[in-house]
Length: 412
Image 1 (cartoon, rainbow, N blue to C red):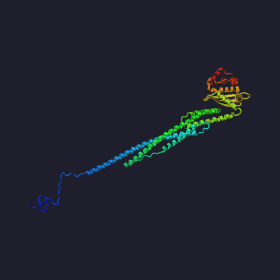
Image 2: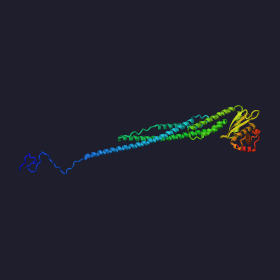
Image 3: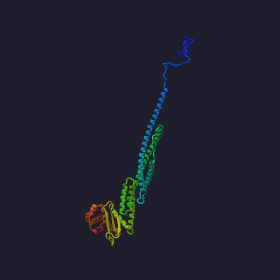
């Protein structure tokens, strides 16, 4: 066998002493083609795929977190808006209620602070009204403080989830605060309502006691002038119709107290005019006349001469009456009537004048179109009451028809 030359490029192996082949210590020259085993695996890309999937998962988690944070914030913002709307509405209601209570309280204060030293009101009713005014003032103070409280605005919505979560928690806290404020407003509203009810009830109670006190007050001041008494009655009637406490109620109450003061003032003036040695007899005659005509408001004037009589033992009387309600009359008597009191002739003349006065209760019982029939009626009424002295009108006007006497008997 011939051995190839070492420089022969085709020489790739040499026989060993033991036979077979041995690889050359290195490859050289040109390009060597390395064969592959078809059974060996392809290169793996698992790391890259896992990286991509991991990144996608992170992005998805961040997206979900952002969406969750955004939706949570929106819900919290909506809840806060609802809570603030409730607070705003209740504030508006409480503001109105507090303002109304303040107006009632001011009117009640006008009532309770007005001097009641003439027409005295019940002390317990006055104390109750003062206490109600104080309670009302406390209620309005609390209400005004709550109405003045402010809730912070929701603010701008943050962009990133970590800020959204913080702002959501803050809004939840503010919603809780708003709910607490709404509960306080509701409680205070109830307190204002209770204070208002107590104030109105105690105010009306005081006005009622004042209106009812007018009746015994009038009886205690019997010598007051008719106009003052009528004003007192009207004012008392007005007070008793009051169903709430406001400026009109205060005005009505003050009018009642002023009317009572006028009753006292006119009585003082009347008694001063009647003062003197005949005062006792005059007051007895006035009481006598009122007893003959219950329900008719009588006022009396005295003078030396009335209707052309009064001197030399003569007596004079003159009556003016009004058909209105209440029926009222003014009877003028000469001083000689009091000087001769209680003689039958004095009583008979007074009865004749009362016959004129009481006709306001019986105007359909006789003909009031002529002076003669008017005088015959008064005379007939005095006779029907049992006063037979000629001073009853018979001496001055003649004897009346029996029909008049019979009719007058039904006038009481």
